[in-house]
Structure formats: C-alpha cells, structure tokens
Image (tube, rainbow, N blue to C red; front, side):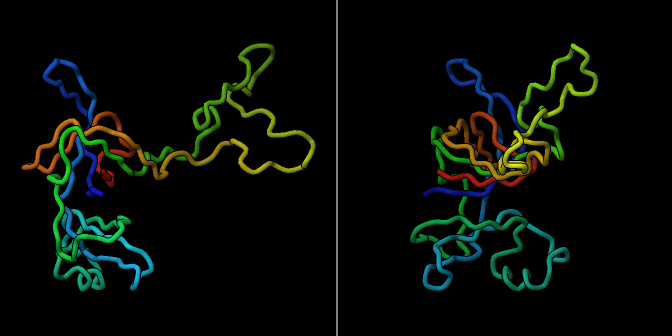
Length: 201
C-alpha cells in the first residue's frame, strides 16, 4: 500500500500530448517522516504515524519536543493504518513511490459553510412563489405527520454544513514533479487551499 501526506495548493489545467485539457488539483506531497510505528502487540493495531512539514521549536510544547527530538518537529501528524508496516522510525517517504497514471484515493476535510438552511444544505425546492406565499419561499415545510408526536431521527433539516471527512476514490495522477514534491491529480479534492490531505494508492 502506498501513502503520503499532502497539502492542497490550487486547481489548474494541464494539456496532454493529444491536446486534451485535464482539470487538476496541485498537491504538495511530502516528504514525510515516520515518527512512530504502532504494533498490534504494543498498541493493539498496526499503523504508521507520519509527520509532514516543519514547525518552529518555540511554538511547540515540551512533550512534543521530547517525542520528536530525533525526527524533527512536524507541522502535521497523522496515522495511517497498514498491515505489517515495512518502515521504521526515522524513515522518509516521498512522491517517488507514486507514478503518473496511478489511481489513488484522497482523504480530506470539506470546506465549512456554517449553519445553512434546507435549500442549500439538502437541495430542497422550497415553497411556491405565488398564491399568497409571503415568507415561505425557502422554508422546509412539514416535518412529519401527527404520529409519533416527535421529529423522526434523520429528518433533513437546517444545520451545520461542511467540515466533514470525505474520501474521493479512483482519482488519476496526471503529473508528478519529484524535485518540487508536487502531484497533479485529475479533478477536485475536498478542502480549501492549504488543507491537509492523505493520498493512498
């Protein structure tokens, strides 16, 4: 299994040799360092703890300075579940593990949109614009019948929108620039610019 941590940079377009245009998302991927190895005997599960980026020592708490003293101070730390990890603490992973044309899954957190109504959050049609309607153009309407005298769990209503973990699968790697640690993935990936991603192959 291939994996690396990345940061979203921007969206752009790339033309292939045939002249076709591909919408892509540029990601700054790695290099990442293995900061810890979780084992089933010690921790109850197998995983790798990966560190990405560099953080200033003065902005890092003392326990983290002690924990990462021999592998540097990472800006992001994430765990990736793997069976029988083939890496050890201090190993480095970079974009060279992927190649152009690979299909990958990208996990990230979607943009937070705050408290939204049912029209934007769930795509409700809203009420009619005529026949005496005054203030109900974007209202949800009825939320249930008389029985069971409560709002049924899962009823689509207004609420917080976005800010959830999403994984996009079967995305194609269009271009890799190893010397700059850049990966161009076809299509869109969740999150805003600068948000953290996990790429799995």
